[in-house]
Image (cartoon, rainbow, N blue to C red; front, top):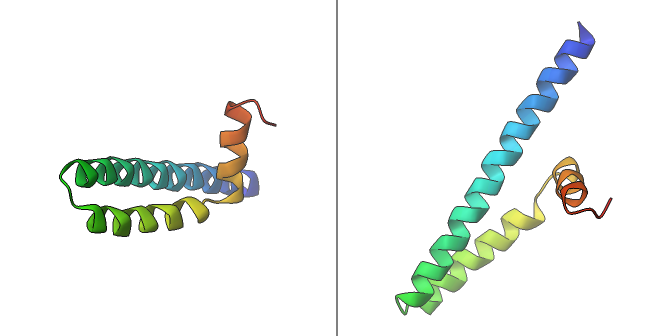
Amino acid sequence: MKSTNRGLAALWQRVRDWRHERRIHRMSNEVVRLILAGERTSARVVDVERMQLIRSRSPAQVARMERRMGLR
């Protein structure tokens, strides 16, 4: 039973990580859109929030990303 719970916890963590990455991606697109619209101050605010999200990635998420890039 414990291994099943760990498996479910790992699955939910991956879902949370995926949603986190999607949010970062959407914010990146928003920064570009704001810059092209000439709203540099708003773009900077969104970019700072995006950088905070990037820094808050879970260690497991970073490890998976590095493995995919061949860094681990």
